[in-house]
Image 1: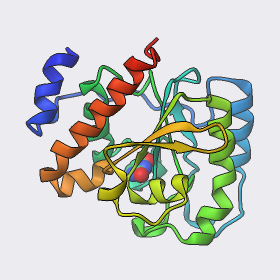
Image 2 (image 1 turned 60 degrees about the vertical axis):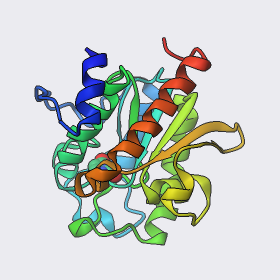
Image 3 (image 1 turned 135 degrees about the vertical axis):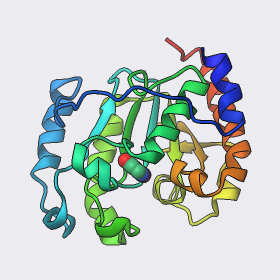
Image 4 (image 1 turned 45 degrees about the vertical axis):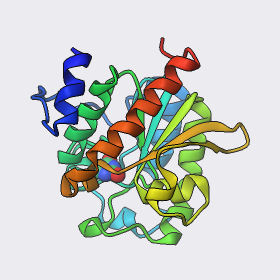
Length: 218
Ligand code: URA
């Protein structure tokens, strides 16, 4: 029940979730996304291709109203070819469930499609080589609302250096189509700083309200 999960999330409790079967990394919802995913899978534009196990393109619903954008694949994502499947992903699932959504009703992608070694921060040249893929991915999904997860994603999408505290809690706008965009804490940060879950919960409610107000819930 989404209603009960709200309380669990507010209390910082992660509900039990069943593991999903391993998807084929480029099994995207439409042919155009599959084509883009295949280009990503063959990309050698930056050094990260040398150390990746595989590329991590994106997962979810091509018709999604809400698109989530994280930073870069970590260890488990690099192994599985799917974004947010590690511990941060478990928390992200709980956050989505708290507002009645899940990994199949939204679309999830990252700024970088390859894992930086030892999960270091992405280098500016890696971001600039990679973001053309994300721009095309957003254009194909045409989400009504974007959620930037963490500082790195927000800085790139909003072209700012503001702190996360300054960016969260309000509606921004992305790109020439002015897609409304909300910034919140990265779930990996929330695992280390659970005291900020309250603020993340407020950001999720902003997402929820915006989806309802725009009658975006399908
Ligand atoms: N952190 C991210 O930003 N993205 C992932 O896919 C996993 C962890």
